Length: 250
Picture 1 (spheres, rainbow, N blue to C red):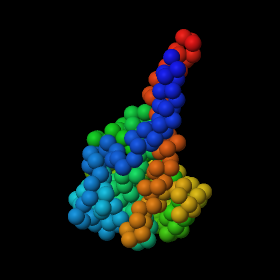
Picture 2: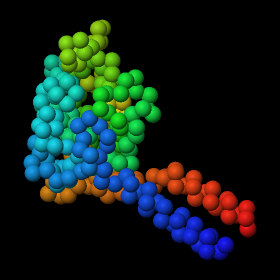
Picture 3: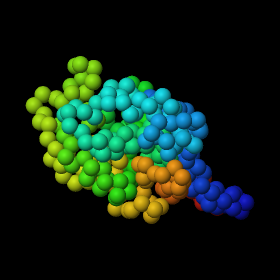
């Protein structure tokens, strides 16, 4: 019986490593993502940082930069005025979402999240991925004078003409009206896909939606940190049952 206890002890010891590895270097099950991350010969502009290991293709990276992106037929210019710096932040966020292989700890099945209708081909999404404080602050500052008509861009649009238009009665107002704080912009725009973290860049505890490719991908270490603390419930439950069973027999 003693050897069983030793085996269970070893399994409890290595379980966090197993759980964490399952969440590293993966692509979510979504409409435009590759099945597994791999290098790309070329990616377009703001998507370039992920070229060495990407969940997106060149085609996806190019479409992410179009004013009415065919990725989701979504126009950032739904209120006409969008400052260039603001547009750049949104394209970076789209590249981050479509290309990053370091979002595993925050991937969730769409069906479990209360979406009214899951987008076609969208099996998974990210929830509460922690963006660094500077990312949210700079994004908000560069978008303050741009215009929008909604705080939650995930739903509620008028799609009658094939692309998103402001719903009836919605007013086009500066971003600062719909997003009073940087956290509001980061968290509300895509229905809590991102979470505004109090941590700063290079802390190792928050994600950067864009980075200088020559300096390496800082999100690899962040994903590993969060993955190591993510529970593997199926394995935990099995080991718990075995432990109780052996305790009963002894």
